[in-house]
Length: 127
Image 1 (spheres, rainbow, N blue to C red):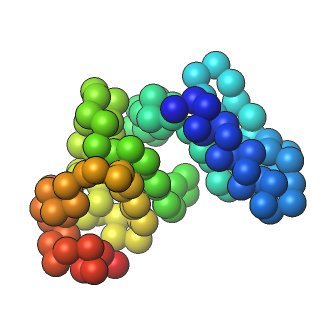
Image 2 (cartoon, helix red, strand yellow; image 1 turned 30 degrees about the vertical axis):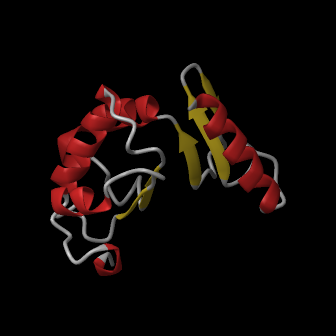
């Protein structure tokens, strides 16, 4: 996860013509924070995201001030961190209809996730 966050952040920064951590693209992994005050695209591990959510508290979790889009890769890999994050997302998604969430996996059961988040209608029904 750490290597993926760092590598993708570097690639996106390169595509935008900037150096990661000096412009709008940054990353945070355990023990390492490479982002500027202007950071708008943050790549991080699930653990870092959970710590951030814990600091924000229940009322500000996934606040529009801090998160507009959330992309989670390899969501089928079940572990405590991913399960906690999905539980928090489940609580927030109806309160934050403008929060854009992308759950990615080559092997996940899409209908199960749609059902869990009560989105229904198959992948085409996702706004």
